[in-house]
Length: 124
Image 1 (cartoon, rainbow, N blue to C red):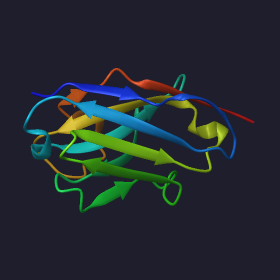
Image 2: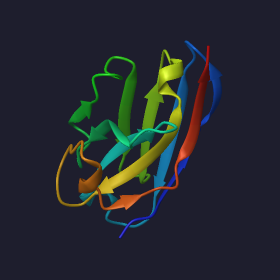
Image 3: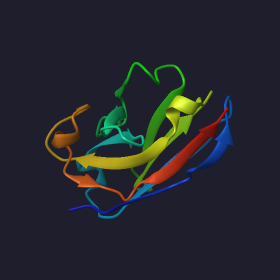
Image 4: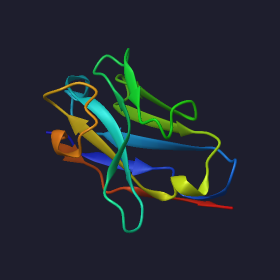
């Protein structure tokens, strides 16, 4: 199993940048594909970005493509989400998730472990 803890959220203005971090426990971190999801008030949890077990492949939601970058460091058991050009529509709780059985899945139900989330608020 793996435990996940997100950090790095906060209150920023439109156009600003923010980097989220996800710290994972366990020595089998590289066995998991990783994803970032977000949930805005009154909305369903939705896919943001995913990265393969090796870190060599990534996949992004259309809404964040070109603005967000997911990365991982398997030597540190860390996953990151660099968010640039933030807009009010990006306001949400952001969750880190781990997927043991598939790669680059955009489906919430496909992930096996979840962090507690970190709040990102973007003001206009």
